[in-house]
Length: 336
Image (cartoon, rainbow, N blue to C red; front, side, top):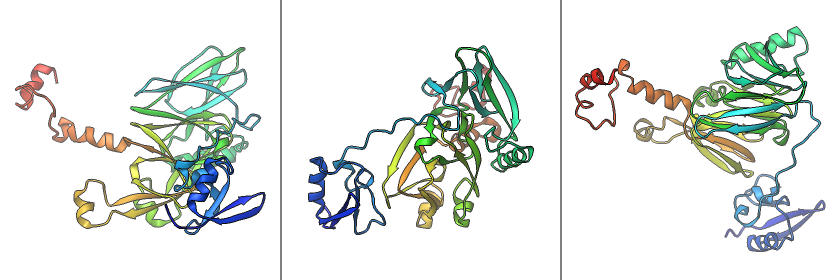
């Protein structure tokens, strides 16, 4: 273990210094809890013990906070169905609404009516000028000017479902438990409870904007309700401690909490950049905060499909028959 000396904040007072083994023993004995603020040399600021990399293995994370009620966004219930091609089924009480990207609806139950609107139907867009500004922001992110609002106008409960656009997972996020805001890639948003605001998040650093994979603009989700994101392949969540860094492929970043800083980093040697197959840049993430990563970016999936397409000169791979190895002859019998 490190020889750095640690300090603990208790009732507004600083306790310490103490060695790392002494602090670990105190944490395991329950003297200090997972949310106890700790500090040592090399850490830029005080942080909860369970978020500090050197201590994470020795302390249980705190229980997840209870879901907040009474916020400005509609509080909806949901179920996610499927494995590779998922869809989310949202349960609406009378008067509740869910807003979704155009074309994502799978089905809707009795009493639900849909309306196409400018912008995102958030409470912030009460005037026509607000709606035009909101629609313009969506245009900058590469999305449609319009969104669709599904409102339960009947009695009892009814459900509406929204499907994934390609293989992957749907990620439910209660924004009220993440500081009221989340930054995500431009095409990650699927649907959300009415009241969640969608806007743009500019990358202030020119290098990040030019080489970060998402350009100057990413999407920003704000509010205190549920939002649903979609990403490709397998999804993992990583909790970064204060000052903890993680380097990822720029296309594998799905979303991050606002305290997480995002920058780009050159791969290194020219040979690694050209022949390593990972591009010239990594995304460098620095905590504290949570990040979501995907194993299969859509751009990577689309690129492999494009390379294999016969129209682009692609070749059939993995076919063991002699017809498959004879170019177009096998395609005649396959019906291709």
